[in-house]
Image 1 (tube, rainbow, N blue to C red):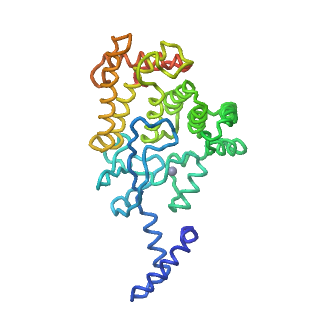
Image 2: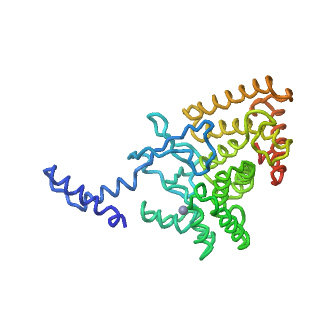
Image 3: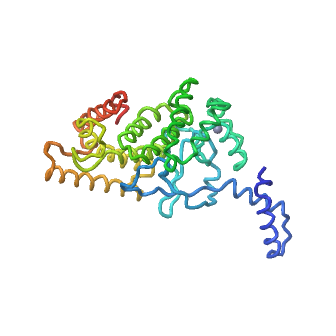
Length: 356
Ligand SMILES: [Zn+2]
C-alpha cells in the first residue's frame, strides 16, 4: 500500500542516495526507511491567534506548520478516541491530556485529522498510516447514514455555502432527511451540516439566524456527538458563537430580529463566553502558551472597554461585566442570561452544569 503511494518518490530518492554514498543501498531499504519515517512522523501545528476576527466555523483553531520525527512520540499508540494530543509551543513539543487519564492507562493519540465518517476514517488510516484500527469506536462499525443519504450529506458537507448560499435549502432538506431516517443531533455529519447552514446565513447577512445556529451547535449538537468532538474543534464553535453577540451596547445590536430583552442579555453573555474561551484555550494549549496569554489579555481588555462604554453611553448603567471566575453571583447571572438567550432564539433552557 505504502509502496504504491510513495514508490515513485522513494525511487527518485534512492537514485540520488546511490549517487552520493559509496555503500550500496538497495531501493527496498530506502523505501522501507522512507515509509518508516512517514508512518512515525508527528504533525506540528500551532494555535491561531484569532482576536475578534472569527465567525467562520470552517476556519480551524490550529494551523499545520510542518512535521518532525520525534522518537518518543513515535512510540505512542494510535486511537480514534485518544487521551492526549501534541501542542507545539515555541521550541517545545508538548503532550497534553485531552481528558482525565486513569493511573496506569495508556496514553494514546490520534495522528489523523478528526474523521468521524467510519468508511473514510478506515480507508485513510489504511492508506496513509497503514493502521487497521480496532479501537472501541471502530468496533462499533458504521452507524452513520448509508447509501444515497450518505452520498447526499457527504456532498453537501463539502460545498462552499459561503459562496453558494442559495444552496441553503438543500442542506436543510438533508438535515430533515437525516432526522426522518432516525438520526439524532449527535450523528455524523449533523454538526458539519449545521456549520454549513451558518456559513450560508452569514453570506446572506442574517446575524440572528447565525447566532441561533451557533447556539444550537454548541448546546444541542455538540453535547450529543459520539465520538465527542475534540477540544480544539469545540473552541471553534465558541469563537463563532461569541462573534455573533454584538458589541458595544444594548440598542445598537445588528441582531434586529431578536426581541430587545434578548439583545440586552446577548451583549452580557458575549463577555462571559470570552472568559470561557480564555479558560478553555488555557486548558487545551496550556496556561503558559502564547495563545492562552493572548486570549486572557484580550478578554480582560474587551471587558474593561465595555465597562467604560456602558458608564459613558448606555442608559442602563447598572450592568458591569464581572468575569465568571470572580464568584457565584457572576455565574448565576450568566446561567440566567444564557437561558434567556436560548429561549429567545427558540432553543431549550439548560441546567448550570451544561452551561458553565
Ligand atoms: Zn479506531
